[in-house]
Length: 419
Image (cartoon, rainbow, N blue to C red):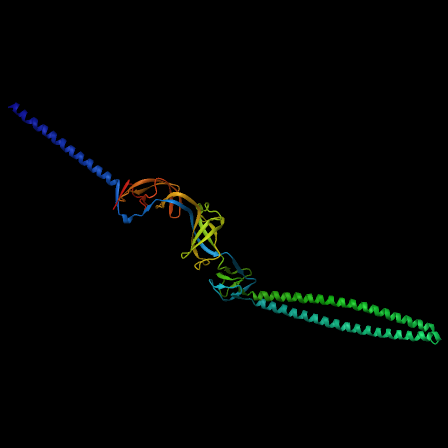
């Protein structure tokens, strides 16, 4: 009986071992399948095509640009200030008004200037009256001298007649020699006095003229004082000074102003320039003479870099752009504009629309689509210079290949399915 029992138990033990081995194989196979599926799931993501931004690699010439922003401003500007203390009496024009050189912007008031003008006008009238009085006195003096000279001339003529008559009577002895000599001496003295009188009158005329010149100069000085006072009074009516537009008004009604204080800023309307700010790290690419496109939102103006400000303000540099004389109607002073400065041309390169969060002169990975456009594989790209919307591809892609340029930095998979 003992032998029979042993024969029956041995097959049962082998059957159990086989069952355990089969179960282990099934469990391992299931684990491997699940692991493979999990790994495949981790390395592949499915995305909708409508949610992706796609771009195609292109080949050709492309401009390297620097973008900036700024305003259009007048090339010719004039700052208007007060000439004296005054109070704002009337504001005639407001910012934005088109002006001519004679347009009155503000009327000021200063009673002291009116009083000063009246004082110098009175002084001028007094000095002018003194000149007239001087001329009258000189004329009276000349008439008196002329009368004295006429009397001497008359006496001289009488003496000459007496001598002529005495010469005839001297030979007959009727007139004594002594009387004749006395009359001859008298005639010579009269003649000499007439000569002295004439010389004195000539000198008197010169003296009179010099006195008139001195007094006339005083009148001229007074007139200059009147003109200056009148000019200061007239400048209380503040004018633009040249044709343009009133860009800034710095006063308010009733404001008391000191001499030299700003009243307004006038700028030209047609002679415009653009002042553009670009990032400091991009400014080194900009040089004078480069071409610039200015976008006014309605028109595009082509200009030229004319000046680069050496001072950095808030990590930006100011670039001055010279604009053509003929500008579109949309261009006006103080208008906000965008600018694209062309720094150089890259010839015959591969380039693509710039992917999100990608920097120039870097190496990155983005997803490249297959020919069927249903799968994208992660691809290493070496990037070059950035230009506007595009970026240069130095290595890793060829013309015609398509890439996903959406931001997929959250995905670590090597492959993406597109549906």
